Length: 352
Ligand SMILES: Nc1ncnc2c1ncn2[C@@H]1O[C@H](COP(=O)(O)OP(=O)(O)OP(=O)(O)O)[C@@H](O)[C@H]1O
Image 1: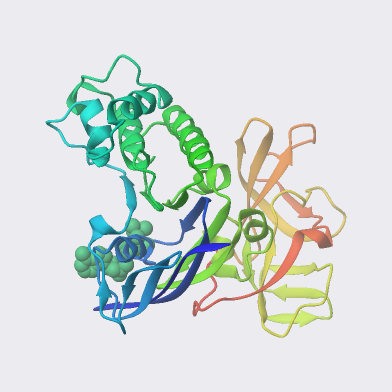
Image 2: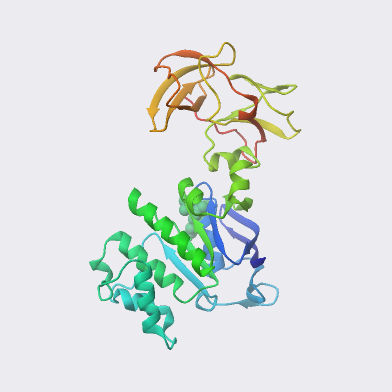
């Protein structure tokens, strides 16, 4: 059930945002997209730190913003929790005072603060000030402070990006657990696909001020909708098609068969990296430019005849061609997916 809905129009010189957003009451929606797409601006609009030109923001029956009715609640009246990359803790307050900040009027404040301190794994550190904590501990304080007042909406802007890989992983798990436990609606801005894969129930993709895709995470990863969104989701191989021959996509890079006929708007073929195999009798001609050992598989970075880069993943059990090998790639039809181009004027593919 939708609990937060927004219809927003906003403009800055050189940037125009227009979107509709509907979020259910609980779960994490990760916002992905290229730099400058408007992810942080969307958070700032929801928080009341920027004012839309038109539209509304509604949480349940309560309007936070409605241009037509002249409603524009101040950020502190919007029932929000924030967590940013740089902690933004009060430097002169202790861990306990930071976490209790939003609970000033709660009668059981001390007990709730104590529970949160334990829950985020900071037992024994209640009296420390932020400058006496590690970066990971500060983010735990920031998370507890944001969630303690049970906000209607939790805004997370790159909360993991200053942390190393293992801290990042443990904080991702903690955020996911706590958001689920508290049944909070959270919006997570991130550049990291892994954050989205590991934490998000839903994915939103923002490009050029538009919300181009918003759905359950599994549905978005399986069907990005167009080539630009596919690139944002980390699909590595998007090739511009110059000609369709029945079910085959053709371009200066070669020719591949698809499992189904392309639709009228399709302009791109995306090759999933996990299916294609080298050493075939017929297929895409490639030169292996680089082999990277990824543990469970090897990533082969290949060069197509027009110098477009192609990445495929080869399970360890299979023989692996050496760098410099010229070979033919068998591309099973299920690994070649036709997509519309999106709004970009040129199809983005990596080149060697
Ligand atoms: N304070 C500001 N003043 C003027 N323009 C701004 C300001 N902040 C952002 N912009 C511009 O607004 C547009 C959207 O920026 P925004 O920061 O929302 O994008 P983003 O998707 O969050 O990017 P990133 O992933 O790099 O953080 C960009 O064109 C950006 O240059």
